Image 1 (cartoon, rainbow, N blue to C red):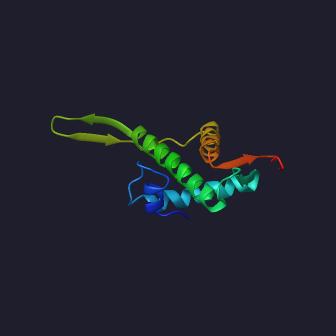
Image 2: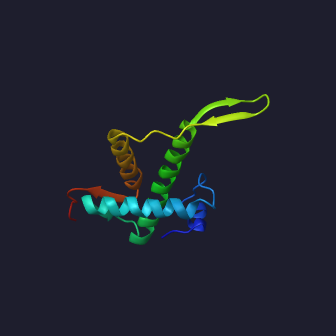
Image 3: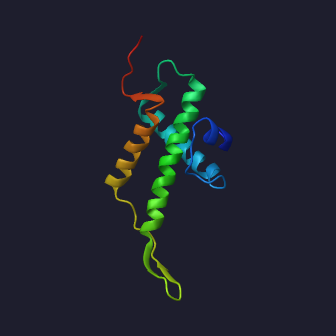
Amino acid sequence: MPDYTFYREIYLGEDIPETQFPRFIRYARTELNRMRETYAVEPRRGMDPDNAVAMALCAIADALYEFAQEDEARGLASLRVGSVSESYVSPPELCPSTLSDRAAHYRHEAGYYLQIGRWLPHA
């Protein structure tokens, strides 16, 4: 599994803070494992298999982080600047179509490094 140095220096990731990286890369591993249970997954032609998986994990982790940021922002119900006041609500449960759209986005991001599909061409 890639570490934060790989994320920053090889993948060139900029979004995930170092303190949160271990959590998001673990979630990314879970998403990639889920993809492997449903789809045929192989490194793209010409890519080193280990590097392709590490890059895909970083791409998925970035997507997970961005969605987490959106979900957190959605929880803000009100904000007052004078005298500083904030109110939060718990984010609503995500509907099945949103979850499906997000899973498709993770596949799309991983697809830059991995070939994901039901049937893979044989060379």
